Length: 89
Figure (tube, rainbow, N blue to C red):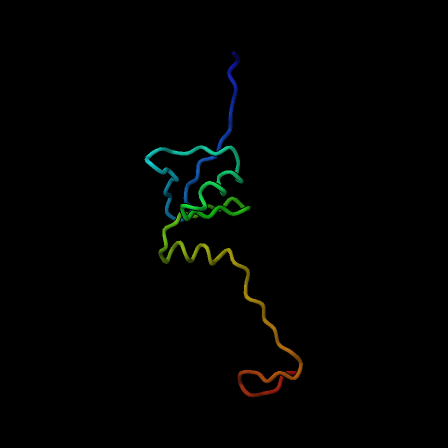
């Protein structure tokens, strides 16, 4: 049988460097979709851009997740009164 190269993925948190290894073994995934689907229940987040976050809920992890969010939309309608009491055009 010939030697074949097989590429797999291991998940490592981008914030703290923690490896995904339930029950003390490192899991190797076939692709990003499999990694995302199989780790979601354990609190891990894997984005389409290959960002990986473990389930730790601290300030550093929350800040990293929030940095990926788009800015909130700013909406102001014609004739709406601004915060300073002036009418916007």
